[in-house]
Length: 149
Image (cartoon, rainbow, N blue to C red; front, side, top):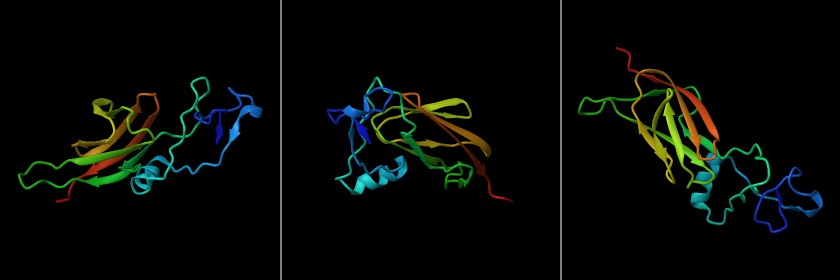
């Protein structure tokens, strides 16, 4: 990683002279793996934030844990006869950030810290769109299938 002289912010050559950068090795995991790993490893150090005057790097802040792209999900009927719910989950490098959830273009809610949302989509193909408060977005397709009679 390239850090500023203080070591508090990530930088790149668009916003900082290379001779002033600190070059540091950093153990970086994809967001979903990071979420699992740091729950069992308190020594894990999260990446410092980008300095505000630097362009955002392509390092993704979010990753969908469930469902994966093009998953087929079977949702069983509950004992009371109602369709069950599916728990959708996302990992975010900064869990305190707000995530806005949309299903097929319809706003479903927000999450913060614990990025899980219970949804009951109808049978068929759906598009899940997530946007965090920084404007980063993820789009994922999945399908709800029913039991064949």
